[in-house]
Length: 323
Image 1 (spheres, helix red, strand yellow):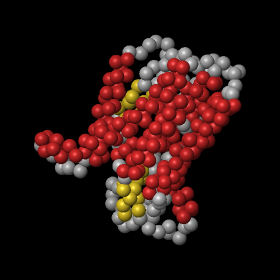
Image 2: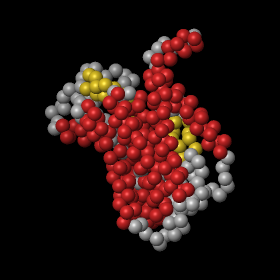
Image 3: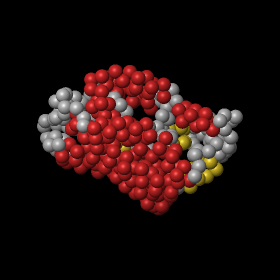
Image 4: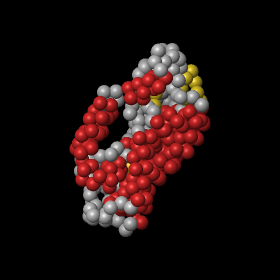
């Protein structure tokens, strides 16, 4: 969510509608690509016949993912409107040929928040609403998924989705196993294996068990992943708003530690280096409210800390492991 740039000029609603329509098409296409097992041919009629079994799974993926993203963005939108703060409708970002088909969405406040309480309400409403929807979608998707044995030699191009603490717990809740379950812990205590795999993505669970996720589970995983990204405690991100209302201008002192941590994680998943670049270019400044004096009441302090707890639960250190 983009809240630090305040634009007084009203936006044209047709732009929001067009971007959302393009995003729907892009996400459906991503869902088809993820499920398609037919031939790749120049015969369009044959391709259309082959693609039809994938359509149901693609639509389930699209409805689940966009349901989470819409809930997230309209959480921000309605929280802003409830405080009388001018705000745009969500801008969705289509991203064809991406595994998700989208880069998410954002809204833009058209005026600064009145005080820290308003900033918290607007900043937390999105990830909290999206989280509440993403969890049951993930559980449903995992229930629709199957646990299968992995090959002893993982083939090139094989991929594993990363784990957050919550995602591990949900897989255990549904399937009764800590997945992926390796054939051997390699002489390590299970807890040491999991700490290493959680933060580095190795050793691979060759010959073990893992869940082959249904498209609905993939959408739920993506929704939790996006929630974790938004709750990074820096700059214009939702987590940046949470840390600012708790620490005030001292929140800027946390940024070097966040950047350093992401740079380290980037040695295992290079996508974090792009996030470091984006944060340094666009996200260093916080969205400061007009009134710096009014402090949070006890209830809002609790919810601000709850938001940080959710961040710890859903943050995925290594989002993707591709062989």
